[in-house]
Length: 315
Image 1 (spheres, rainbow, N blue to C red):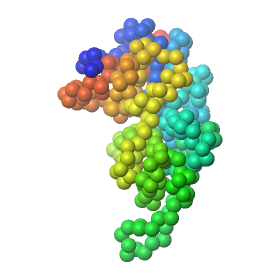
Image 2 (cartoon, rainbow, N blue to C red):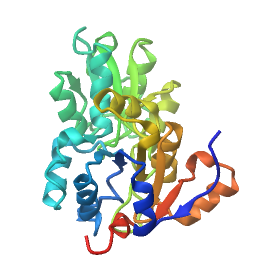
Image 3 (cartoon, one colour):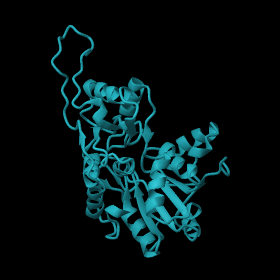
Image 4 (cartoon, rainbow, N blue to C red):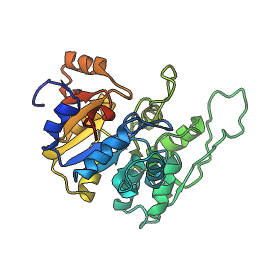
């Protein structure tokens, strides 16, 4: 049970009073630090302010399309503090690779069937995990008169596939769906891991729906009849990953993000302080809707227009 349903509007003056009680800040990225390829105005200065005060800063994104190293370069190019490196960043690609590594995938000679992007590939490469299935996978030549593919030639023997990973993949198609479902369904020891289940991702055109990994994960889950291990927010795998790498006190840690169902729920579920910024996906309307439905795990303690609104005057 959450402490209460209260949510308080935050500005620089109010934030200065809360700041003394927080040692660690965990930030979502897209919609908070940047939006697409554009830096979020005021966000670099806000992180500079926190770092100058000696606060610990962690970036936690649900975007697995790029590796942590690539995101670190992006942050640097946007003017973020030089102390923020790839070792300051957590994304589902890194957590997936860590999950499989700790499960011993790279020791038992098993391979990973990957529906995912370059970010997951690079993180798996970093830990020496063998994978296949990336890129285009055109549907095999079948008669146009046949509505289904009845005979599927798998790339690897099902017993040699130790895991199926599903994330955002712009090349996702029926053939990939069928392969993933069969690798999972035909081998009870095959681990099914999902990067995240975000329904959509933010973009520069608010009128365009951009499906994220969630619809792809759901398709595979329904086809194979098995629940995946989900590593992205709001699930616990990402929190455990952070706890293994940083010393944090949840009561003195604040999660700041732009989505109530991932960022705020992640914070609430793991005992963190929470703040929603209105610069990305969700706004006050979503907070009020969650309040009306008594969904207190998706109600932030605080909300603010953006990170820039929290920078003290004259800094």
